[in-house]
Image (cartoon, rainbow, N blue to C red):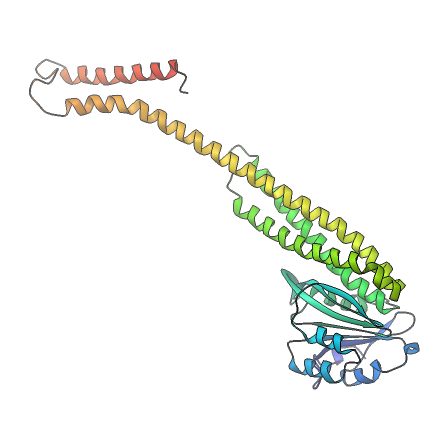
Length: 334
């Protein structure tokens, strides 16, 4: 049976997809009407991954009535809490993790939440909107990638998020490279809106990574006591997130410095243009005063009753301009 033969959602559950993993890590899809039976199978038969779409009310009904999890896990799966969380409840590992919204076949930059409960022989994930990490992991399963344990699947999902953030960081870095080329040009361009976009994304990503890192480091020891494999996976992921967060922080600082450089360059260009305008005003003001004086049309104006008086007045205007130029150069105004 292939995924293409399965309905998008089960008529009564709202399940998006479900897989049964054998002991060797290979997977096969489960018909949605068989999910309840698969979840109650003994652990020796492998383990099960069920992915739920919380936008379907039937999914919430299935969580409340049929999901083989504790009451705390039910509240977490169907709840609206958006705080990043990772905790152990008995033999269950529960959590709320950040992820990127999956728009059709492309990932957007919008951050959403992925909820999960991991038991001894199952992983149940749930989301309000499609998420990239779960979708990429499903594609890996379809392509033949093996997940021998539930921990390995959960590790792959979180690792997919870390890789997506790393790719986003590289993309933002490339955008900063392009901005830097423009900023260092002969005539600096105003790239502040692009810098603002990079800084906004860096701040949003840093906020999510900081919360996730804090949760991982805080619960690493406690999770390791209950599940050594899960603790080791969390420790490795925490170290990877530390490295990515350092890159994001460096990116934000670089964007801030570039913005300061742009502001300084734009101020320099403005000052240079104001200086040019001031010099032109200084040149034009004296001859304007001369022409204004001769344009008063009052009695006894100079050069009014002599031959070539207009040319004498023009010569006077040019002479005043030359004198102004000499004085401005003398005082080193430019």
